[in-house]
Amino acid sequence: MGKYEYFHLSIFVLEVESLGLLHSLKMEIPNHMHYITFEMDNKILVDALEVHNVPLIEFGDRVTEIKSLLSGNPDYVVSFVRREANRVIHSIVKVVLSHPNPHTFYEVPHTLYPLIINAIQ
Image 1 (cartoon, rainbow, N blue to C red):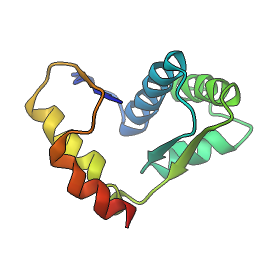
Image 2: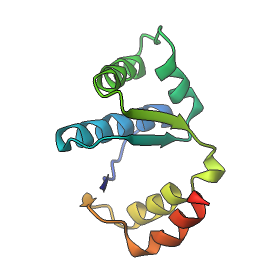
Image 3: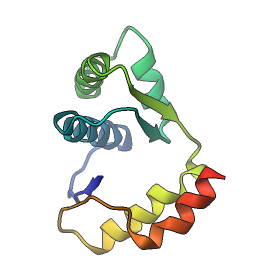
Image 4: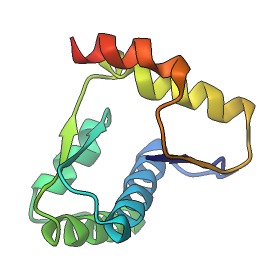
């Protein structure tokens, strides 16, 4: 299952990625999905989720909410992957930029199968 939306915002990448993770968690929890790994290529965000003290800015509030959702779902994992290794998500981003209307998909788009197979190997 996946979802994309296009927002015209003037905020930092770190805030956008934390907002994306928060929305992902809120989408998965009501659907009772288990054993999910959220791969992030933003090391600052992944590190912020692992420490006890969080910066007191809007990003910090979002991290606190994400940590709360993760603590209630122990089979959800957030892991860091290098940007170069995250070709699947970058392919999805290209699609999103060309289709600004929100969309939720429940099956893997056929065009992504080769990228997913390469990422697994």
